[in-house]
Length: 94
Image (cartoon, rainbow, N blue to C red; front, side, top):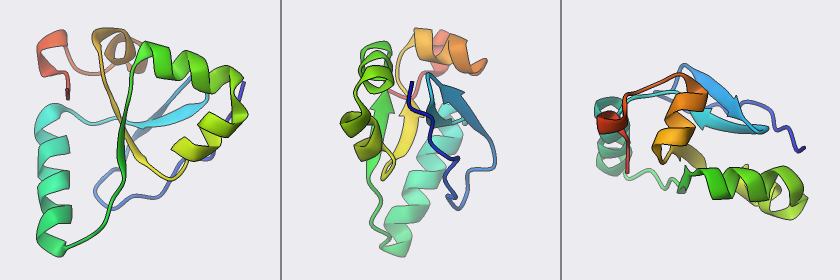
């Protein structure tokens, strides 16, 4: 399993490790506000959505996991939300 350090990202105070990948522990409203703020600042930010498939691939493929280290990663899918103990299914950030 690949375990990455928790990234430092303005506006994200809580992170959850999902199969070694740090996922921003924020709800839909917070994610939208964060991304709108980045756009308003003209801040370039790479965003990825971690679903069950991506998490499983990253846990066995070090190159893929390393590539994700450059992204703000948001939960995508009910399974990832359940794992991170976050939002209900209707609060999914997809």
